[in-house]
Image 1 (cartoon, rainbow, N blue to C red):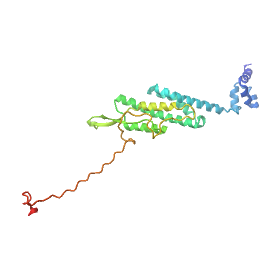
Image 2: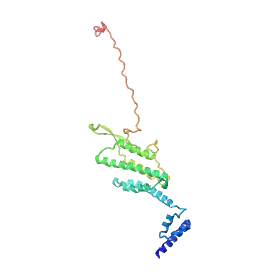
Image 3: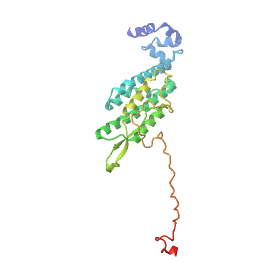
Image 4: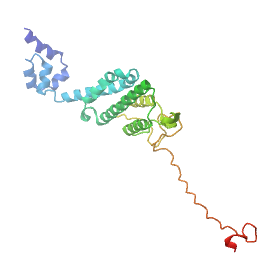
Length: 260
């Protein structure tokens, strides 16, 4: 009795509009199935509303939702929990394709994923430097900046250095970088908050504009392409020696061989 009632209940619970879109032959076959909706989908009965459309919309919706969650998840966490807090975004991106979620959204999600790698590396550096009471390597800071600039096609953070005394054995006064963890975090947080719809884009300063986050330090780091080029001073040539004036009438010169 149960087996007879289930198909009947399934057909009654489906909206009339859906029933109208199902091929009568498929409808007749699936009326006998225990899973009416599953049967219809398997038979390809919903010609006007393909199954793929529902999957696509769900994937796009899920990916947008995970992007919206990113800002709070990367701010309110620790490095230990970082991977688990961003895992749902990584998974949503991994099962998506450009055709399913839209090329623009897919591209922006990929960029955010690359930026998260930069954040993870910077965060790891911060912990290591703090544990060893070390200094921020200026070249690694510049590398992180260049990576973010390239990902977002923008001028993201400003990287500067400061002079510190490292001791005579370590070169005296040397240039060291600054802690860039917070600027990197703020940049990625802001970028993720820009994506609310499928066709949204990042709103960050262009490469020729002032950086999104400036630095309080004033000295350029070694290797910074923005550092002013020092003008080469021309080499000073030795002035030609003036000939020595000889006065053979003077007591100093009159007995010299040159005057005799």
